[in-house]
Length: 458
Image (cartoon, rainbow, N blue to C red; front, side):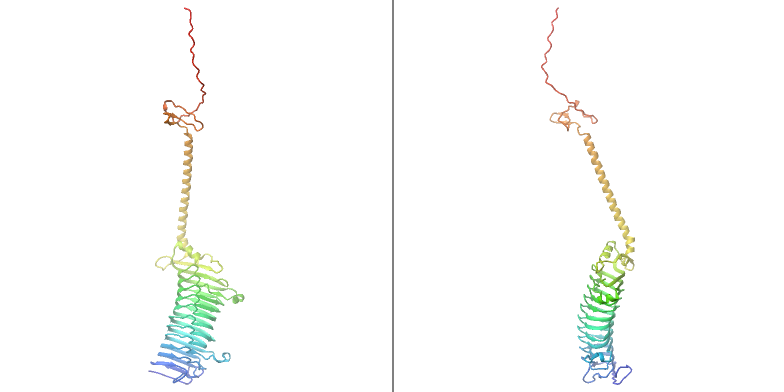
């Protein structure tokens, strides 16, 4: 076991001495009172290569000259409530100390409890740290803080309101994995400079996970967000927004609709850009890319859809994926969208090019088929009309052709104009015979009286 403790000023350059522990196999306890407590006049604390370190409640509260806390390569770091609470009773405006810089590197932290970080903290940095759980109000009531940064950290669980009610310059998550960000993970926070998420893998980001005001730049870059709920970002910005080179497997309706530009800032600085470029979507709801364009000017390019190119789906994508809050849509989205040309998923194509090369022939084929059907229908109607006309004409020509009269056992023709009966000689019918009806008057026959015989003299 190696243990070193020095109470004199050293190379750390703080206002006072340095407390240094290295290579300790047993548990190191950082505390404000009792045996082996932390000296109040120490300017820095450094602990490295230890199996287990416990930071007790109020450990640095009375260290008025403290500037730095470095905890590196700790196998198990246990943090109690108010462990990193620095004295806030003094009048901070007249206090010359800018605050404490806390840096935790290559360490496993089972839990960050409520109110673990409070008071005048200048910066908090976690690097290559595994955090099992962040409790509600773990970061709260911080004063004068410049930056909170998580670099290549794995965070398994974050409770709602873990970060609440403080003002800082920058909030950064760079690299690592965050399993679930529940609603109101960050709430009531004002960021005066940058809000940045870069190279982070998020498991699930729920609605209103971020409720933040004031960042002059908001950037989401090279991230994977497995599930992105509606209005996951409720960010009221004072500057441009960059959403670039991300992979978004599951996107709900209006996932980015909560990103807005502050109205006061808009009145004196004008509209700001919202850059949405080279992002990949796999599954998405209608109008998943709904952007607020009241003060922001969305600029879209290379929206990559991890789907096979299909002529039937292109219109659905262009009509029901992107929309602005004023009801308008970008012009000609087919130039901005990309899809996958085959199952190997290694060849992408601009939707416009795919549509021109593959869907134009399909459309032409459909038009050709429809045209043929229409022409065929017209021809059939014409033929039917002609046949009906000829039939009527033929029927009119032979309307009075004699037929058998069974009642009279004779051939007769019934005229359509009168009830005359015509007797045909020998009962024969001639197809080309013209029939003429001659009306005759029939008068009664008087009795015939033969002339008397004239007697001639012999």
